[in-house]
Length: 164
Image 1 (cartoon, rainbow, N blue to C red):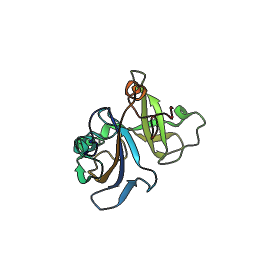
Image 2: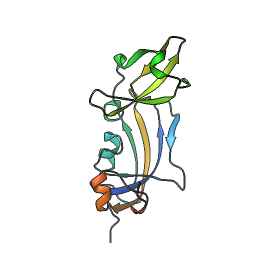
Image 3: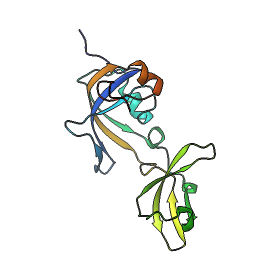
Image 4: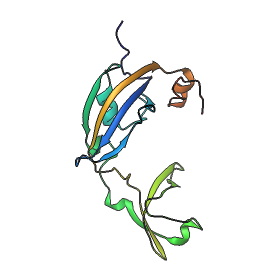
């Protein structure tokens, strides 16, 4: 019997290390804490999802995901000055992630870049926008998603029974 393969509607478990082009580790999974996601449902960056399609449990891959297939290119206009009063009494710190609403009412993340007395510089670009993402990945498990996971578009824990 062959190992299960990565395909749409499968919950995929990976061990990974993410580095930038300078070789600095940006993120990685823990030895007993793999990342798991629902394949084909935009749970991970598109370039990595595409590269993992068709791999099987036990396979390893090194893939460089260009910014366009990761968090996108940096958009200079996404860096904006906002009056300090717009943040009420939130104790702001550089690097902090906050959420606002997009014009269509969806949550939209922003990152605090600088805090001044009267203005705050915010960046709507993801911190990894414009960065090539270098992944080293091992597929450790693949299972079928259950009906709840498919309807919600994300996995509900390692076994699928953990719920939200």
